[in-house]
Image (spheres, rainbow, N blue to C red):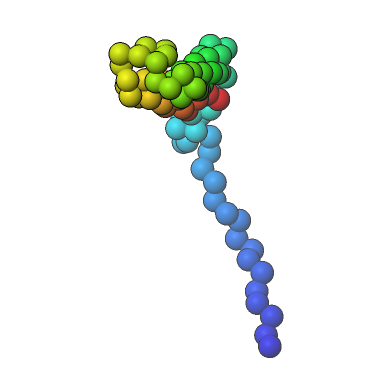
Length: 89
């Protein structure tokens, strides 16, 4: 079986000044502000607390007149926390 030839040509990489998108993308990456994870955790706790309160009270609390809209509020807080967490770096 013949042996394959070794590649002698170097792989071309463009100079840094010809790649401005990489430079600007790295410059834009900054750490998230501290309010992002704090807000997400608060929304998670509020959403779970709202749902647990609704189920354990038999639908009388947090706001009895809203009936099953309480579920939408609890799950809405959880979805909002996911949206906030998507901005976390």
